[in-house]
Length: 143
Image 1 (tube, helix red, strand yellow):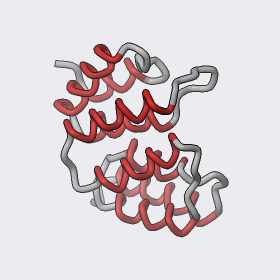
Image 2: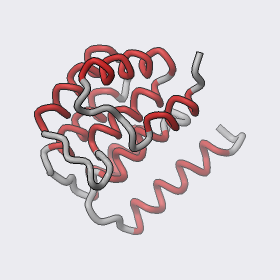
Image 3: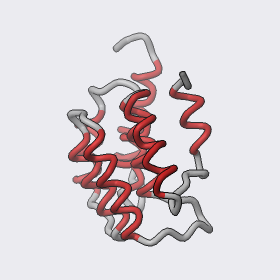
Image 4: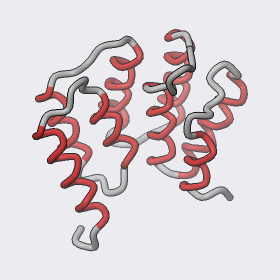
């Protein structure tokens, strides 16, 4: 079985957006591997790489498929952010801080945290501080 890191590395900036069958297969695999792998797919859908053009309708279809295949306490809030990002909407600093604080107790959900981080257009000192503190805490043995 593929490890989480191997899976994430294999799809990073290489997600098959327009090959629905392959995308659905990867969605199912991600959901079996780990929540962070599933959130990584959400991140890929919310933030396709520069130079890759994917119709918003296709991104929404893939996101809906993942939403049906995945269960996690953070799923609803992260999917809501991803939908906003797909639609070109940015969230407020207070919303980003709130979501990041909701994610913080869920150790190693790096992709979910990244979605909240990037859902805000400009990164304030407060956002940077919370992001860095969360990553440091997850990376330490103190939690």
